[in-house]
Length: 159
Image (cartoon, rainbow, N blue to C red; front, side, top):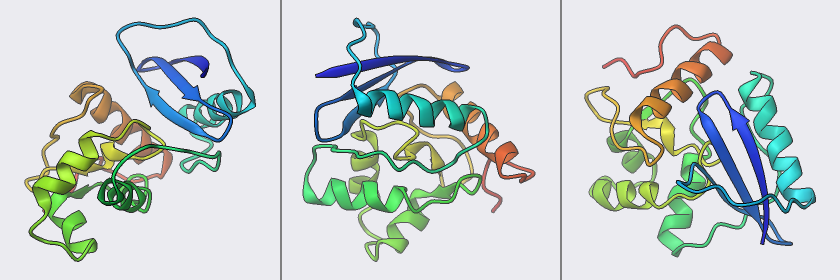
């Protein structure tokens, strides 16, 4: 296991990878020592570009473990445009599975690649911020950051 630690405007971000890809990006309670490899360093560089408003997509290898359904949800999350959050209902319709809102929300909550697999871009149907493992204040910050980066006027969905 390789680890890089990145100081960001929203806290200390930990990046973990093996030889094949990055499998964790998040804000854990405890920060371990850094043992970087090329993948964690590249992820840290790209995330720094994100926080500097120079990037909104990532292209380093990721290897997140999950069920087939979770992987489908995570893939769909990566298709949500920065600065344009959507609701769980919209996401379920995009996936041609409108009755699976709870299962989709559960898969979203199991995402271990914060920011890169942008689970923060999914909000409630009423436009309110709902559930984020990093805390709702971070979700709001990320949405506001992306709104500014994409030169959009709002960070929450209008109904």
